[in-house]
Image 1 (cartoon, rainbow, N blue to C red):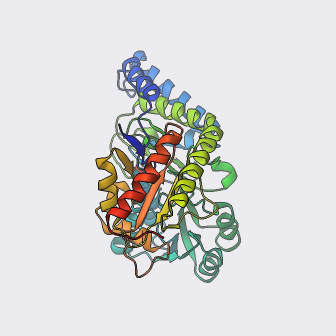
Image 2 (cartoon, helix red, strand yellow):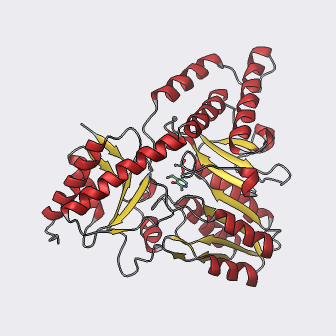
Image 3 (cartoon, helix red, strand yellow):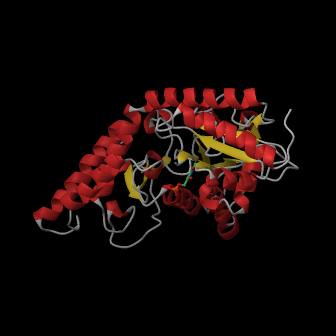
Length: 383
Ligand code: PLP
């Protein structure tokens, strides 16, 4: 038996979405850029999907760009602004501890384009708003980027407050949101949030991997990451895929339809799990702040090497996370964990448990017991 508690790394494949994708691949076999009418059906399908996504996420159809991943969407937005605003050379601001897709792109802008990137520390796992304000008030700013929901702790970031600060101090700056972990967990509106770019990844919703979306405000010029045949209005060259567009729209609709039910299920599972580890007397600290989505729970377990725990649990069929799966072996996990203020402690003690309605309470209970037993086995005395 396998019990999966790493939905933040990737959602369990949703058979309905996979079947839908496979059918759409069969239904639209031609290159949508071809001139025969059978191929044009593909373009019509993409436009219809973009209309639907626009309705669901509060943007215009023309603002939807299909990409290969959240990483590609983030790279496109940040590199585009970093490049276009280079002559003015104001600062770029981000909270500490962004996902490596953003953090590494900002490092690139810093190294290769000599852009100044300033990082705002976190307090209680969320960006410190007074330091954000200070940074925006004292430096000319070209770009702000932040996650809406942290992949490490599930913290919901104060995007509305950051937007207000931007309007006050840096109305000309561009604002990008990494909404990869927010989609399906909190309501999202591109228009109401007043941002310029938003990045999404559909595999987090159980869709096939390789499907991403970037929303880019249509009155802003975009520097494409991929140059070539000029597809998607020149914003992202490469043969268009109607099945991708249709499946993305379906996955988003499904996740929004299920948002309340998923939240309720995750809350119940999380409560069950926490009650069990408390009853067992596990020594831990909750790293997920109060304002977090219930689907992601980060714990700090003193003295524990979380990679060891992950392996021991996996041997029992219990799959948990310890940070960002795409870079678990790299230093970025450590820097993301350090941003939580665990200074002096390398980022080895973090356990990330993700809950989803496909988990049962019995699984949550079994996980709690196995963690307690495994920690005990590593020789850490419990209280
Ligand atoms: N941003 C966040 C917050 C994420 O959690 C992830 C994936 O883990 C990404 C970006 C990257 O998305 P993708 O795996 O689609 O490249």
